[in-house]
Image (cartoon, rainbow, N blue to C red; front, side, top):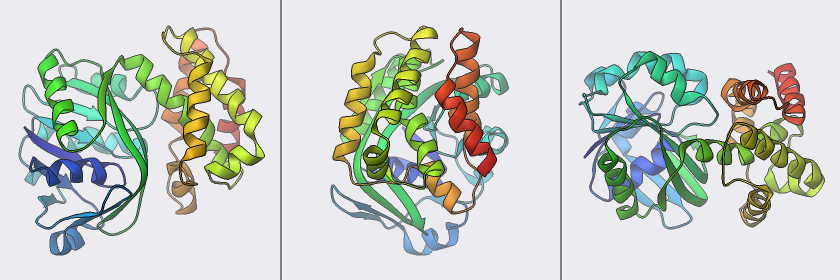
Length: 297
């Protein structure tokens, strides 16, 4: 299958790089570091072993890219309007678009613009960053869950997961709504708190352990109110343990804030809070974090 990566940053660069290293046909969209990558390739400095892609299929315009079987979108969600404009040249009738983005409501909004599109969610559990041109730093983890949103061809999802696994990525299919809310259980406490309190994951757990846990429980309660099954407080305990074992890490929202980039407040906070409210649940703690982030943005 042919792959296109929209947003070759910390996440898109890692998964796209893994697929390309395995020999899959992968085409990458770059922005500021296009010229650098054309001349120097793409480097992944990984805790599981460094690797370098010498001859990258690099582009700075989707109009120049071939149509693809699977498009992996790893753009920040603040750029969704841009996504809607640059996506069409990559699409065939059966193209699967996988949104490896943070938040709730992303797939529904994409579907409203492209009603017949096959869409899935990609929920990445990874600590990675990109702070220099053409270099992705992968510190730990790296698994990804795939939640089918509107793809009628189950074989396309299965084939994608098989390709990821062959490339050394721990990939699994999960129920869509469960997957999105499970990712929110980690994202909503740690992303916002890291900005508000100017702290990495280890510092947050040391200084605010109960508040982090309470926020996780609130997200789980919201998910249950929205009809999500197989998600209870034991998942919060698992996320706490996972975070304690990882290298101290600044979540993506903290990096965006530090580099004076727009923060993903809408899909990470506003949208899930609205969805939960429509189901009769008030996310009070997360509303407070959202308010403070708005004041800082």
